[in-house]
Image 1 (tube, rainbow, N blue to C red):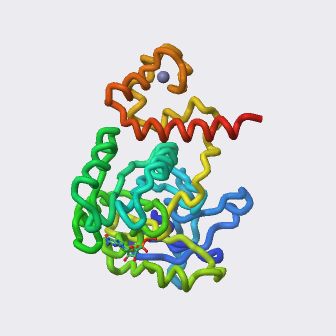
Image 2 (image 1 turned 90 degrees about the vertical axis):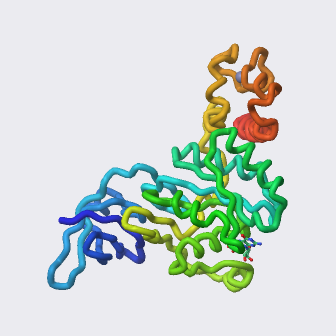
Image 3 (image 1 turned 135 degrees about the vertical axis):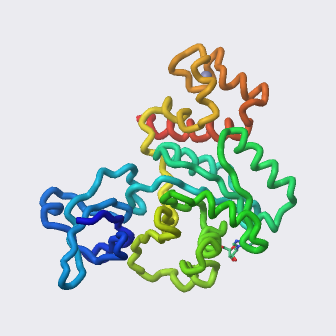
Length: 292
Ligand code: GDP
Ligand code: ZN
């Protein structure tokens, strides 16, 4: 038996990347009996039939992570892409993406793209907020190639999903990282696809033997319904974590409670006002959804 990773699955066939190349496999019936479906990203053991060089998936290793939409296992990292302009950066959406990635316990890198369109100091102001919150950040441009090498090195030894709203340059960035990907980018392809029922399948692209990127953006649903209790939300604002144990109440929502250390730190300027405002917005959203 030989170990590999599923990089693509179509109609009951799984394409498993191994040290012997990509092997077309089927899954053993036992998985269906147990109601287990292999998915892209699964690390598997396969048995190869010498006659036709096709294989059977014999075993699926435990998944480290599991995204539902798109269905993919063992993602280790999310690059959250926003453009500084066209479209203008949406901080509320950025913070929402961050909450999802934190919840999934992924490595996170924030990539601010299209920096060729903006003043240097506008970009710096954004990066400063997120660096201070404890995030790794990158500034990139697919026009000037600024930051592309740095982006490549962030992808090393990771299985990465790009996330972010449409139009910010995700496909363009992926194409710069590896021109073999030839992903469709820009308005033309979007118009061409509109209305068509294209069967979407996800695929992992190999950058080198231990680095993969997912060809489809992640977190397509941005619902926060995985948060069952409003108190959980602040766990996903990582810069709140070092202060929240000093709040008067253990269950502090950092909302209107007295002696809230998080709010104190916002006033002093150690926590960004903007991040805190977005936290409150999300908190109210969660509280309203749980009202009944
Ligand atoms: P996606 O929807 O996030 O995959 O975005 P695309 O890669 O399709 O890019 C959307 C549009 O932004 C396209 O017209 C790209 O040519 C353009 N674009 C992408 N990256 C940059 C960049 O760094 N600078 C500028 N000025 N435009 C960019
Ligand atoms: Zn508090």
